Length: 156
Image (cartoon, helix red, strand yellow):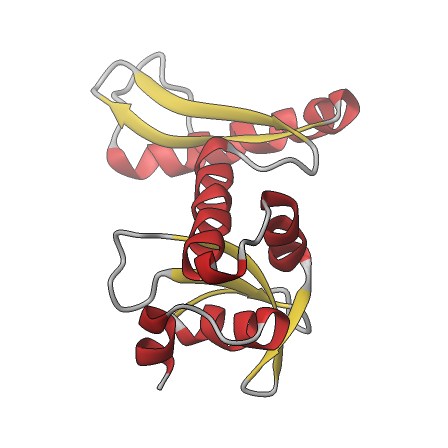
């Protein structure tokens, strides 16, 4: 990376600047008990602006929390015949489930994704994945028994 007093900022420089800034703030954020980073950028020849989002360590950011809330609502909606409370739905979401021989932890639901709306993390590898409704239906049936007719049709 170069000094930009005498030269213009170009697209290839933005990633290097972001990486340098993220490295520089990592220790201070850790000291403050925060997680965060410089994210997407807009730039021109003389300036660059980054999106910055900070969260308390171990907490979900806004987008992650919204997807988690959507997942809890989806569980409650699909189990509407069972009168599941919000607390029961949260316990279900927080639990580790076995689907197709894989241990997973549900993390969110993206209602705009028609084919793979269920978001989860594989417990063994810690990798994030997206899957179809079956990744929600199978554990829900194990936990709550028979669910709504819509769930039965989708799972069958």
